[in-house]
View (cartoon, rainbow, N blue to C red):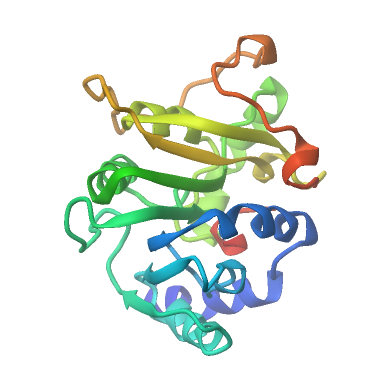
Length: 250
């Protein structure tokens, strides 16, 4: 429904705002961006204020929703950033190969229908030595929460413009040809847990990527996570802030 998508949904974003726990993490990860930057799914531009104008040469702001773009333009005017808005969806990044130094995605990979193509696009446009900063929510490691996520996902997808709460974002990032250098995870809000399990971290292109095994398939239950076997170095909740829902928190 175009009216809901372009008018009601952006309004909900403004009403729901940017909770303190989410804001604290944004303050720590977004300033890591440098050089020419692409942000996927900028929404109302809530991240703009956290970019360091001294480190960011240009910010490409990808967002297909006209209502979000209007709000993002208002936020842009409050900064000194050189911003170029791109109206394409995440699967159709209109930038040249190896053209950006940093890609940022916050609460966007959950809503992109072609998330596999979107991650492939991120890999394509990153320069050698570039980095992918992400802050996303999705599949909880707790079986009881997973059951609720599967039950409530249709509601999330309806109200929050295609949001999937059962995606394992770090797994998708790794299978998309990235090595996760830093990562942290946890519930950033006590309720609802079905929408508040998040990961935030930094990934870089794998110098020796294996053939991609990504598929657009329904999510399956995953076992409890054993932190001692986690292949990615944890940062600790204290290092990037402590504690949320979907793309509306972007």
